[in-house]
Length: 305
Image (cartoon, rainbow, N blue to C red):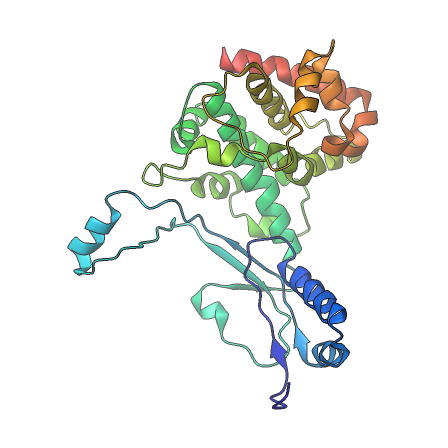
């Protein structure tokens, strides 16, 4: 700004939704609070803050990874990083001036990142959580184990394919063959991703990743048979937490432990759960949703027994 260097693109790569917008709004608020109106005006005239989305798991490095790197390269790497083979990096094409040829390294330049974010959280992330909750309930420790087990059932692929419906007008272009996109992005035995990690934060995931799909199905006149298995799995998962029978400590930043214990001690825990507005929004007024949850919770009990 002081050197009058010209327009600038501030490209944010934090792994949060709407990252460019959040960065912009946070920066402007900071500048307002510190009395930097001139900088705010300069930003408005000279900068853009595109949104981006990245999807590539970087699991905890395997114990033998440093030795494998040393054998292959001769380098004694003290902090190696692993990455899965699947990768998707999407960038909003909203640059203020000239930009690098990011397409040359596989970046997808798009008008809006939002449909890609929606596809990721509703199809991929929600299916990962489904597999972690189900795997835990049948006594497994790692996501790859749970995935192989669940592949013998139609649950993950049915959930992802039926979730696909209308995330956006271009979802079908994003997700390749949907079930395979979902399952190819799952951790491998090498990554040894624990179910505990993926099962965490269910009380945030359901309203963000799962409830919107349930709501849109009902709006279209479709009963969300497959997708409803996800909150049903979480209900039974949390029932085990309530009983103290989970094999690990459940981690959730917004867990109201007292409220959850009270729910399972109520006369009709499923009704209390299905009428939780923080989780399900307007679905709490839908009588069929309550009936559906009763059916799917019963199905989960059958699945794990």
